[in-house]
Length: 278
Image 1 (cartoon, rainbow, N blue to C red):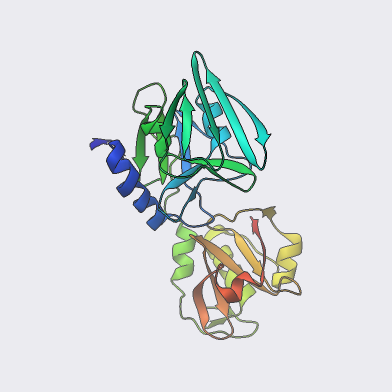
Image 2: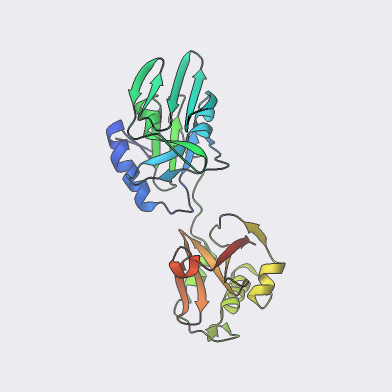
């Protein structure tokens, strides 16, 4: 194991266990691990990298391989998908359902069965180091895997944002009691709490109710980021909170006052409407 700045460089054996165990422990369902090839982040426009039940980082195959310079073609083979790739004089083929690939005409076993999810073929990232021989660094701080296709070490092309001062300010009011119509530290309702935090930290005067905020302020986002507003209720945007990251949000609830909850809990997930960025 070698230390490069804030990134570790792992041997294949260590990469297959400790690296992916760390990813599994820290990654959240909505905050996907990022992949970098040389100095460029890989864009995954559809399916995202995920951690499987064996704590291995599984990556959508096509975006990764195209960023590694391969020409990629695919065809249906019965119910399975067959993929063939070429880069210079190097050839590579694989098929979903198999536990091997064919590299330059030779069969090479993979660490797990090749499968599909969200319409994309997935492979374990360790395949890149063990089969293709690429250097792979893991940046724990930024949850970023860096593939050195040129054989060189690379600094992160993306850094995880520092702790948001607005979020720290909001957390300072944890436990504050719930008061209908309240918008002061003496007591908050959900929209009153959000209005107070945004006014004090960002100088933004939001509308009074969660419904007004939802329909008049911000831009809808598919995946919330820390500081975005999240909305809940089956009949309309009746409850509002501030997203903290890692699936958590803070809001003033009628039952417990200002508290942190998970949008993935059985209660809130069934009521989640969406998120907006301001």
